Image (cartoon, rainbow, N blue to C red; front, side, top):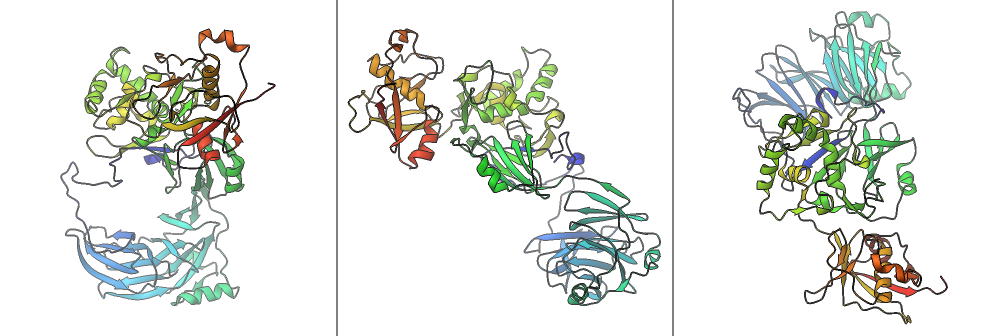
Length: 591
């Protein structure tokens, strides 16, 4: 999420989504070269596996690291060279602390142990068996006399490094991720996204031991676990935090519905929610239900290409748009309930989503340029040059269409963040509403500018569906078709019915010269003449045969196909084969 508001709650109590715009050549890596001060980062190479923890002394002359290799490594940060490695832990090292002088180091590990290292002697001088599970977080008093520790066992302990006396400060309901000591309080961050403040007596830790609930930390990991099993678990010194900053549960699971506009998510509290991707909002909160059962309940028999990808690795919903794949999905305006737009107009989902995301940017850019007539002029020229010879297609069905339709309106109160990069190759992140209109091709991908400013889309694949049209066995009704036909994937079956009827009744091909969005059924083979199926109303001269309009049924795999079903849906759910779709037709008597 976005810098200081990375885990805030929006007006509806849901975490804000992130949209990433990527070109097909993106490698998801970030390279740092130089800063404004000219500092060149030094690579400290030596770890063969993941690094989970880092710590540095105050003057910056010593760096320690730990991870899945179960050893503590020491580095000279000025040269990046290794100086030492310390062995002792038997599992991943998850937390590290250095004293201000750089002489002592404390480590916490998934083996449940805390170890105190003397770096001068290059050995472990104490080990503390305090926790019953992984230690994930550490903090120390200013004098490095006491250590606070938390982890996977939900518990926060304070331990005297010299006497080994330990006390259980509190126990929560979630694993502890981070600790921060401030005066006489300690802030505790846990996996439920909340932050709690607990008493810690950082200035005078001995006051807590006076409660009489302390115990002597063992030096073997099983000793603490054995005490727990024997029912001798320490009593927490504090029952309630002095302050709680509530967070929202992290998203831990998701399912993209086959409508390709909605995503189901499940968070760490078990709550299942339905997101509308084209608006970036939660449309329904189902509470604590089964994600799998809810997915089955919301199933729709529709086939729409996958035009985005989703991940929830950061605990929030991230939606990725990659060119040219993102422009493969289309729907009719009627299916999106867009009023005032012809119901058979095709709507490109990615294009309209981008228009919604950049609507505020376009407004601000027009203000900068001075007038709507001259707005975007420079950027349009730049974008056009970038794709002058790249085979970019103009989406003629909605050219000069700058309106943002309701299904693609993003909230300006709780806007999503956009993550992308331009020609300078530097990734950046801003809220949709923080774009100031000065962003250009150095900041935004050229394909995105082409789409938003010039209504130009890259060449797309899989927008057509090839099929054969044959009479049913035993049918006496036949029309002349010459081989394989081709039509948009989203073409509805009732358009095929209209095509058959017009061929039967009018006994002549339909007008091929229509320029208002009619769909051409291209016959396989360049030598064959193209036939046309209208996506709009039937021909104006067709009233004379409406009285004798026959009733036609379309079948696929001997199953009657709904007139409202698309070709792609029929192929996916009824034909269920990779080869070209075969449709059969028959006249139904008595209708």
